[in-house]
Length: 142
Image (cartoon, rainbow, N blue to C red):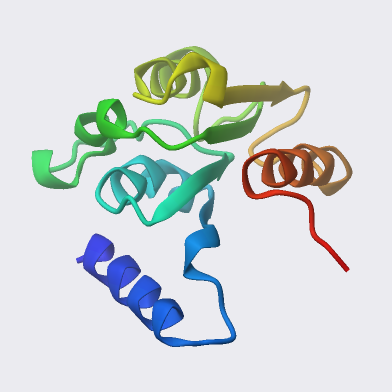
């Protein structure tokens, strides 16, 4: 149902002449970053993904809703930004396995790990995110 909701949201964006549906990026934080691979894998209208403070969940999920099964099908550019000391998504057991399993070509995925907790501070995060968006969607004109 989550994927259907995202798809309907993109349908709505596509119906609006004042919005550009060719520039959709999934930006997920924490649980949104955990679900990100599932959502990106099933809709190729999402052009890139940014996962902040996420990784594989440690709780059991049904296979049809487990991001583990979707990560290898992700092909879009993906940026992961995490804290090394994240107690929800530990580096070795959840962050690194997700990053390695993403089906995105190595040249189009990046894992940035800051000396921080669950979600890195904005002053560190913002530069990484804006650089990523400029790289894959082009700089903002204006």
